[in-house]
Image (cartoon, rainbow over all chains, first blue to last red; front, side):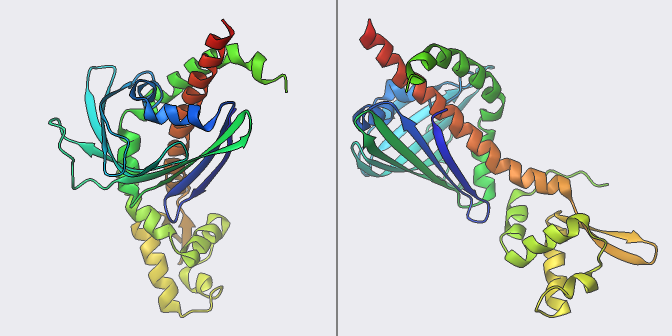
Length: 170
Length: 113
């Protein structure tokens, strides 16, 4: 498993997660900077994300929707607070209505991504996610995630099984 | 027993105080009333009573009548739900990281070709 540490603080509704990748910081940054790659990991297989706008600069916006198994769509967007390739990305994730307008009465979730080189072949990515209140967290979780999760885990295990041989030889 | 959808804000708000968390911990296995609980803390009975009332409103504890006494009991189900929310969020990100890992591993395979 590539997740090396997770810290959760129920009082401040903050989660910090560290993960390590066998890749360069530039490669890990691409997971965020290339909308086609972002689509392949943001939503679980049962709620895939489609990125319709992607301007990864301070003040820029990313817009996406997620489509559920019944064809239901949830729209979301990121407000980019800071983008410093390939090391740092800060954004606020929010929800939008069917026309793509931000649902302003919905609180936002702030995510800070830090990408740093550990060695020539390894990169650490830290995600710090903070919620203004529990209702916001509940909302994010309600966006089709729970259902899709178990299936996603099964699919991932199958995908990763093919890669284990190359990563366990260390 | 009243079944209502959990109010997460109230739950997390109730747990955002060290004294209240301690009350929740103590009341898991004890048979203490508010007066007995209050003896554990360097504050007035009224202050402890207020904390207990906040926890009760959030559904984190209940007061049960045992004979002539009223004891404070932790609602284990509510505690589990509050914890579960952050756990679910962790799972969401673990799923994303796994998919990221698969994507990165995929280009290694393509290089090998």
